Image: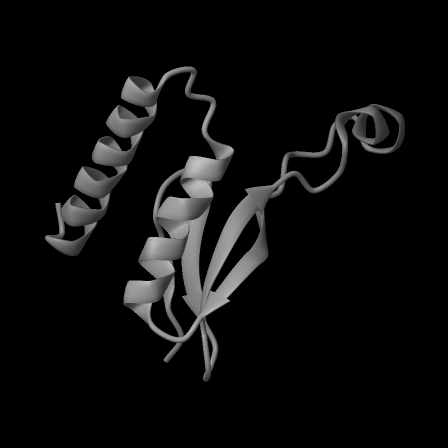
Amino acid sequence: MALNIVIDERYKLTSDEDNVIISRRTKTQPEHLKKIFRPDAPDEVRYKAVSYYPDITSAVKGLLKDKVKQSNATSLKELLEEINNFEKHIESLVQGR
């Protein structure tokens, strides 16, 4: 059975028979095209695979690296707070909270 774990509003982990996959939420179409072609269409939730890992531990480490790269932190203190909050979030997911 394949994984399908939503991590937060932007990321989820899925799997195939060989990999654990980090996927990032994407928009289905750019806003300027939506206004022209489908102004009343609801937003669809789609995810794009961004990286592949051999196991769940490596995938979680990769997810943290991706979140750091996507961060808008303006100081080291702010970045470390984001990392700490993410680690706590992952821990709460593991413990089923």
